[in-house]
Amino acid sequence: GGNQARAAELLGIPPSTLRTKMAKYGLKEAVKS
Image (cartoon, rainbow, N blue to C red; front, top):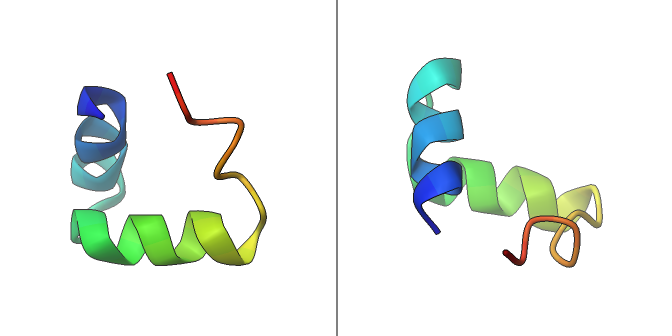
């Protein structure tokens, strides 16, 4: 959860965009935490 928002912030993109990218690259399980 929090890591995702932080990663999005570092990348300069909205968290929703980050989620979409991660889903596209199949990283959903990897970032479950």
